[in-house]
Image 1 (cartoon, rainbow, N blue to C red):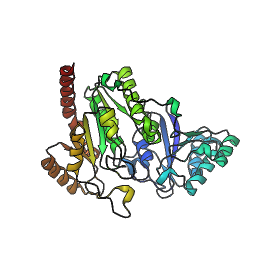
Image 2 (tube, rainbow, N blue to C red):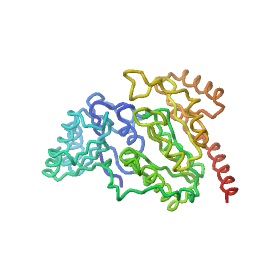
Image 3 (tube, rainbow, N blue to C red):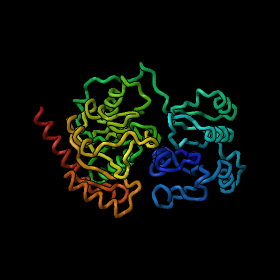
Image 4 (cartoon, rainbow, N blue to C red):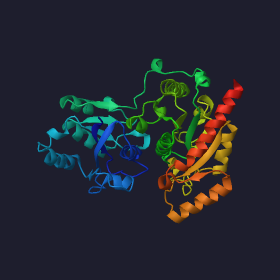
Length: 372
């Protein structure tokens, strides 16, 4: 049974700032999401904001409003009905800090006996006031991004060559572009088509959604990123024996604030790539105020992937700031321009990519047989 939880977004309940919140509302095998706390969107249904469908996940302006509704439903005192619930920080902030307004909400949640789940780089367990408050109200602090000690990390071994299941990496031309969500949709589409598929999570949201295999890449010492990725893949391959393993990408190959991706192609030997692309986005998010770092042409990204020894199987479009007509025009033009399948995951799903995946798996099987 999933653990009941609310999500705190502190006025930032939007697809750019609240990736964790949006991901948990779309899917969670670990938590039952009861509500979102956000004063800017109070009175709405979170499902309608995220998916366009009413999911009976109300947005409340404050934790006290949520508890009042819950106390009426359960016919108990509002303070008591918060005990044992989880309050998940659902936003990503610059540098992973906790803004003052959010910190006040954390103290309030703790005072009601709620456990805090934190995926930011600012660790709650290092904040003495939060620690004392948690102790006073018998609540727990969970810093899921807190790194392991070096002695507990896996170092790359090269045993990735023994992994049977082929790998596809879900890359993007920037961060916050939908890589994880598209990966989950493709995983589900493949499984529905009879392709036993698993996904390796590499961020805090994937872990919170109940991912069984993976690690949090940007909290891992650089020397061990390749090893942790390899270790997660090997364990998944041995325990699940899937037909395919999808790798959730982080950032992008050339994002200046945190380039990432070569480990997937070199160390994890992902020979297939699906590239998520937002046609209207011209500059990297980390530099959107100055506009000094333009996102390179998509053809350059495909060529870079090719030079790493991998093949781009398809492009998936993020429809941010695009009208329906513009989206379809971009899709048609890119297919002609790149000679690749171009999909609109949000609008059409990922089912049409299944034949491409099947062909990739068959090609990798032939190459593996020839190599042996």
